Image 1 (cartoon, rainbow, N blue to C red):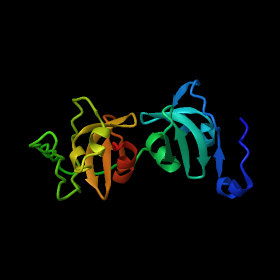
Image 2: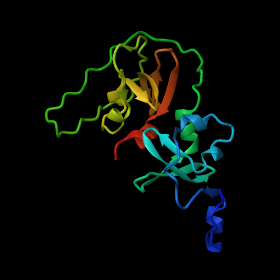
Image 3: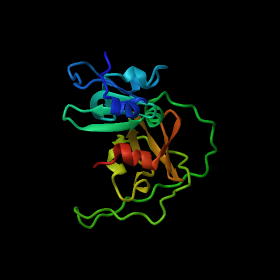
Length: 202
């Protein structure tokens, strides 16, 4: 695929990026972002690809050293940080064993007096006690159900969630991050601001 000609007054601006196509082709096969992140040529392998990133689909129209731009069939364009994509969709990392403190019960769900009323944020967003025995006997809920709420991440504590096809129970909330333990015992950490940005409803 040829790179479009760039006017001289814009060459410096686009020197660190690769513009893929002025007219994206949406007739090609849709591929999950997970199939590209583990490749050694990522993100270059995304050039012109029709990808699915956490439910957002589109053609990769520009690649820079830090991010990619994706244009959807509805003509909306979103940017995604390359390092965040590697963290969320790359192969699972095997963390060092962690000590399990005593089990704690997850907090009771917040009561809503009115369906139109927004949930009240919890005074302390850090829940540092780790749930030693997570409950996986239920269906996982999309992280989007929690990321837009005012009391996030506390509202996700103890919940069985799905984050970009990775499922697990939120066993700890601390230092602006959450720890999610899968049924296989793998624990992943996610930044609260990153989850809000990628999965919060706009």
